[in-house]
View 1 (tube, rainbow, N blue to C red):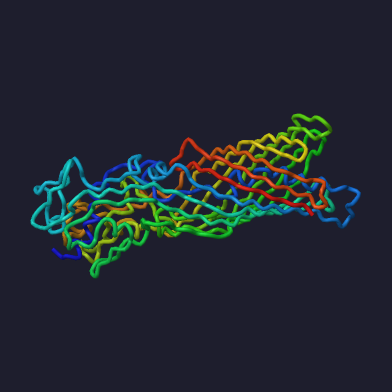
View 2 (view 1 turned 30 degrees about the horizontal axis):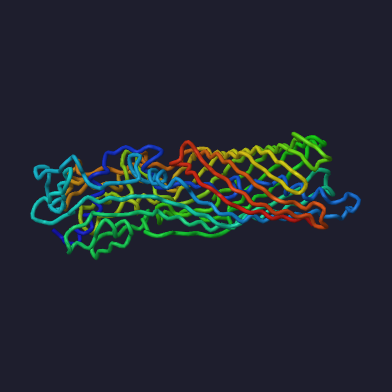
Length: 495
């Protein structure tokens, strides 16, 4: 048998044998994971009412018709995912972050083998491996363990402009975040090796470094890089126009319109668990916010206020490239494929991820954000604690270009060199059908608890504040909505 073909098929077919026929669910065996955008979490909204109220310390008699009330706030932050094992389950198999590549418990016997390809095939038995035929094949099971972690560091920048000169109670705000997100699979890959002359192992196959002179292509999508992959940039711009509907001494109710302009990067499918910042699509919507006095004593020097906010936005369509999953084909992205009307050979075998990387028209649909907090003020000291919710609807995506049926086939372990999926040995192949492609990300829901403590000097010529806080973000669906934590600082000034 061709030596180069042997080298390629060892990792590809080892994966194929164990993965075929294993069902996937929405919480496991997935290639793409949406992480919560930095501007959508509790950090961006925490202490915001305190920042908004800085401008009220300026004496009204000092304001002329040309007076511009401008406030600036900077929020440096650090975020890190917590549930590395759960993220590993999402990207792994059968609700586990440990993937064993072999056919343990279902041994392939020589009676079921035909042709040259499977002459390198290993008979996997519980507790060990026995090689088939005279050729040396995979000498042990391959085991892949995934413990992914995502880390984000950056700063939110918010600007608030009072537009009372235009209309009483009108204001405009703009905000963005500069973020560096670094994702690391923290994977370990063991086994999946052959004899010393086999230079293509499971490790360098999944790393995308396996090379061969006579086969179609090494893995170029959904690569496990073995190190951190990072992206940095501005993660969206939020624009808000707000109007105070009721502005009383004991309470305030305001309505607002908000637009989110995407400025972050888009996924391209090169790496598994690739870092993405921002929402990646235009969003339009609006909401209501409420401030109500709960307690007051000593002429406002000791008081408690309630702050509430609810917002809805609709996400419009955008394009991005993802490596798609296939129903009932676990880890389909790493299986061996062959084009239609060709025969099995070194020059035709291609990792499925290279084929399954498709451009999507992503319809992110609707999101809802709510927040409720109690804010205690004693003189210049302010403490806020609250709850934040972020919900994102299941996507309704379409393929940019329809995926043609009967164009590509998974190669089953019993296929032989020279087999043609469209003419003979039909049972040795499995057609990749468009109807079986998984193109939508499921809905996501995060709950967040947060606390912030700060100091505000509202009597200064230019009122200012400083604060520090933390938040913990969690979900009952941690595999598709991973838990994380944040620490942050805030500083603001009003001119």
